[in-house]
Amino acid sequence: MEIGLIAIAAGIATLEGLFTSIGEGNVAAHAVDAIAKNPESEGKIRTTMILGCGLAETCAIYGMLIAFLIIFVLGGRV
Image 1 (cartoon, one colour):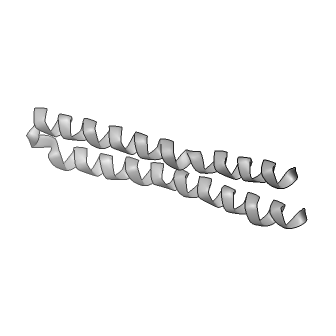
Image 2 (cartoon, helix red, strand yellow):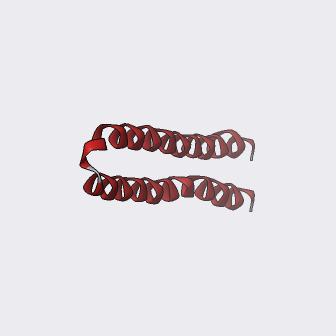
């Protein structure tokens, strides 16, 4: 029973990657819209977009790290 709960917890932790991907897609779509409306500020918009996507990707990596810790640390105690 505990192994199943550990698997469910790891699956929930990896869902963060799914939602991060959705968020990064929204950021890129809005950045393209902003560049289309104001082409002069393309450099500032692109820099901000890349910084935001990098921060969001860091959250996804932390979610994956938590999933690995749940599987290998808690899974080894069962």
